[in-house]
Length: 337
Image 1: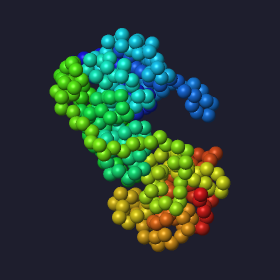
Image 2: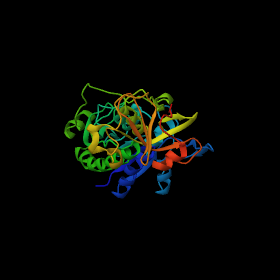
Image 3: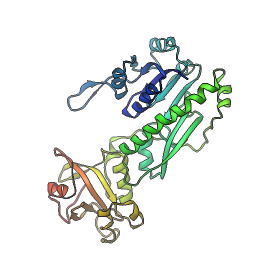
Image 4: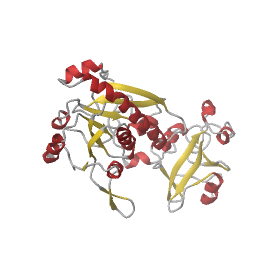
């Protein structure tokens, strides 16, 4: 089975699926990705991760600014004659003119268990909201935002100490695996009217209980020390590496934390386990350094303390444990925020 595939994707999350399609021997007729953007301190024009990989593979690349309005690009893509489109984190909603082009449909690998966390940032929001699990679904695309019926899905447990990059890496590999698993079924169902194709595939239609992953804004990244240790920790993990607080007027990025909560003992590292139960819950003003230890800084919240194991002070390299304590010259009674 060799399918003619048009691939759509932009960030590094989508690269494993592109690679998997290539290794499986499918004919990738073209790759559609977002235009080059200015990134980094030098604001140099940089290609997307998918474009960079596609060029390494010798694939034809298309970079429409807005595919909905770019009728010339739409015609070029139609003329390729793809059997189906595979979409992973492209970053734009495809218009009906594009969705109806391939005879076997357009199929999206989405990083959540739909209908939970439709939209942008499902990985971040699953951690921020403390979900016990998330997963990947391969769904038939519609004009709406992640509204289509799901062909195949698989769940993953979210670890307490797992950040968004680590979870994203696992989900991106699962997306690639599931897409390869889905393609033979999609081909076997054949072409024809969409309703008939989906019926033959036995897709699962989404329930009305929808949650949306809204776009993150700058204020989301600010640490509120009056929140619980678990909520702060979820922000550090979910928004990695961007959650910030202030230390003596300078920005301090929190990179690795652990909530010192007894019921979570078995999910914590050995150094964190040794610190459990040493401070009364809510007994100090939030944001106060309770101890500078070999493991890092213990800081009060509205409830149990939070252990900061790794952080990066503005203008400095990231540091952890005792090195972090020495870099900050922190001692009990100092305040963050």
